[in-house]
Structure formats: C-alpha cells, structure tokens
Length: 137
Image 1 (cartoon, rainbow, N blue to C red):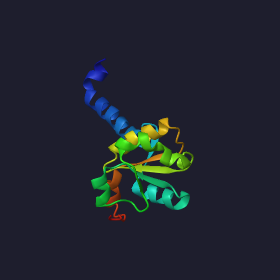
Image 2 (tube, one colour; image 1 turned 180 degrees about the vertical axis):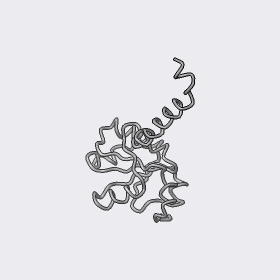
Image 3 (cartoon, rainbow, N blue to C red; image 1 turned 90 degrees about the vertical axis):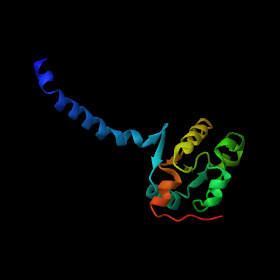
C-alpha cells in the first residue's frame, strides 16, 4: 500500500499511456463498421470499384463531392434503400462532411444487411485536407 501511495503519479502515467496506445484501435471502427482514411478509400475505390455514398444534405453536396458519389441525404436513406440493393454485397464507402452522419448511415445500412460497409473517417473535411480532388456541381 505504501508503494502505491508513493508512486501514484507513475502509476497514473503508466495507465494513461496504456489507454493512449489502445485508443487508435477503438477509432478504427465506427459502430462495427471499419473507418477508412482518405488514402485507404482511394485504394478501395480504384481496386474494388467501391460505391461512394454521400449522405450530406443537398446544399453541401452541391458545394463539392467525391467523383461518382451517389447522393442520398441521411434523412432520406431509410426510404431509398431500394436504390442501393445491388450494392448489398459490394464495397460501399459512406461519407458526410465530418464523419458523424456517415456513422448513422452505416448503422442503417448494416441493419439492412449490407456486408462491405466502410466509413470515411473525418468525412469530406479529411478528404480535402488530404488534397484529394472534388467535383463541383
């Protein structure tokens, strides 16, 4: 007990370091769906012809999008799932502006039995920070 009292700072530092080392593992998935960096997303698009599903609202989408992205706003996604039926067993990358709405969209798609879902970590903000191209409407 005396050891713990005299070394509480070092013990706290060791525990904090352990948590920080494990944190990236927890960030690698969003609600059971793996997160992709923009570079990983480009690779998946090029190698597997992945569908990019943009769940932002109309004004955001008109401001710029990933090339060939299919636009279905998050609010309309449950009613428009039939449009995506042919992609149930194909890679789908879901994106929004910052990555939060796309997590919700991935949850909707996972419940609809889509099998190869991926969330663009950081959304379109991360895409533009990586200096990747956007298509303007």
